[in-house]
Amino acid sequence: MGFEGERTALLQSRDGLRSLSGRRVAVVGAGPGGLATALLLAKAGIHVTLFERDPAVGGRTKTVEAPGGYRFDIGPTFFLYPQILADIFESCGERLEDHVALKRLDPMYHLLFEGEDGVAAEIRATGDEDRLRAEIARIAPEDAKNLHAFFTENRTKLHTFKPVLEQSFDRFFSMMSPAMLAALPHLHPSRSVDKDLKRYFADPRVRLAFSFQTKYLGMSPFRCPSLFTILSFLEYEHGVYHPVGGCGAVSEAMAGLARRMGVDIRLDTKVERVVYEGRRASGVVVNGETFNADAVVLNGDFAGTIRDLVPETHRPRWRDRKVDKARLSCSTFMMYLGIEGKLPDGLGHHSILLSKDYERNIAEITGGTLPMTPSLYVQHAGFTDGGMAPPGHTALYVLVPVPNLKSGIDWESVRPAYRRLVLERLKLLGITDIESRIRYERVLDPRDWRDEFTVHEGATFNLAHDLGQMLWFRPHNRFGPGLYLVGGGTHPGSGLPVIYEGARISARLLIQDLAGAKAPALKELPATSPLATQGEAR
Image (tube, rainbow, N blue to C red):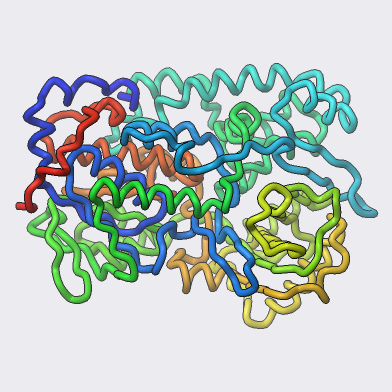
């Protein structure tokens, strides 16, 4: 049953709600999923303690201030489909817009298609269908005629799949739910995203405009299931947003609200492992001491943390051997540059350079070869938000998709040369003279994602989203008795709006289990929280 379909079950039992008072839950990790889950559980009257090993909340969705006054998003750099997060804030009696300023970008981003002698074509992506049609018509007039039909089909596809993405898949029979059966005619498992788009767009550059978004999942559009054409549709239909101050502003706003709702957030506190009473998770070990809880929520890179925190005997479907064999996303090579002076006037907030042989570029990444003609993404946040760098300076974020660490690439030896290669590639965007103006620089390669952020094999986008690792086949939100997961490695998958949806699913299951009754849609809970009167945990 979908999120919107569970409005009344727990409301029929006030005793179920009251039974949550005094219950204690430990949430491990203050990333987006952990923060969202903490809010929803606190709203239900549960005493929540949130443990975060870093000195700040947000995980990879944080904004850091570097020497010189530059500010950088570490991971995600934009907000997509904020309605889910707005619903979570509303369920807590708050309005998202009162906590975070979100600016809708138009154009959303600037696509540059590399040719033999530089940039051969461009599209400034916009949610205005008429303007977008004109942009496409400049490079592929016949394809432009099919834009409306593509939007119409994907509007239906998203509407059909939304209930699927809102339901849990902790039982195999979930694969035969009414929502799943209704969605099957739109699934087309034999089609990739690119193959699906060929029905509308003959020009490969136009297809890329609606398929490069599979990189948000760390996947190839030539292998990613056709379902994910809805990613680009989400952007065009619902917009791309910049949170003023960076994406970390959203995490800080969630943490501030959580504290006001009684959540105990403990920073610089590393959880060592989950502890069990019999088969049930009963708490966590922190600094050598056991913190008892009625349930535990893990928010972290699944493959990077599950073996450290959960004994193998308590994860029979995901033993070490299976985790080792899991299909992973690609990684990223990152540069965070503080630059004295301005950038070219034509460089917008988001720019994406698509390699002249994009299919080969993707094949190299997925095949473990470091691309020498890479595609890259650049965020110039100062185009929209003057607070991201001091006056007269620019904060530049550069991301290059590369193979994960299973490739065996010797990053110690290739990193300096790859940095120079990326700076050279930036010239195609008109950024020709920054080397001498760099005043701050930080570089991350896949090793840093593994060592600093506990990302398994440096696979930045978690487990791959192929059909064999989706829905019931992905790690479950209810991972075992008393243990729940949130984050990109569990159902529904990666990406901020999807992770927030996963938090709603996990919170709903946890509340259902503790209350002994099916939970409603969380925004339907009573406006007054029992936090003020809750007692100590059992």
